[in-house]
Length: 175
Image (cartoon, rainbow, N blue to C red; front, side, top):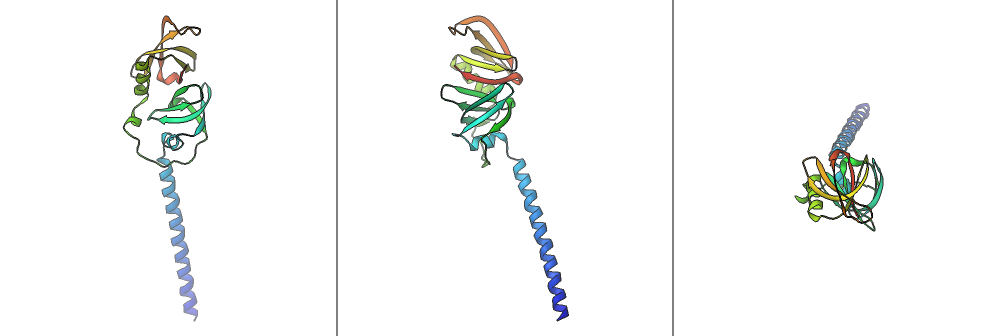
């Protein structure tokens, strides 16, 4: 009888150690999986939802319309906002993400998105750490864009061009 109690105690200790090992392995795998989740994955998970992006130059609110490898497109009631991921300091309104492989279109970088804006020739408001500029995107280089400045009252070209480095770019908004 005494031996039965001893063996039962040893089995209980082994079961407890096995449970602790399993708990530790699950926690480690969970941390590993979370470490693989990108901000773009979490933004893609709230596509169609309203979020608040806190940028270096301020805050922008909108519905997540699209997410690329290096940008997010927000839409509010009046305009669209192309936001480089590097300009985002914080986000309100996110939840967990189902990690899915982005389509080929979504893997395109900021330069690709800005070249589409340049082809459109629409008037945009470009916000940087140095201020806000109105104009049309003339050309997009590897890590910069050329903005043909426009007069705020008429939208007509001023004849001046401003070159903006992607690193300083916070927001490109439709007008």
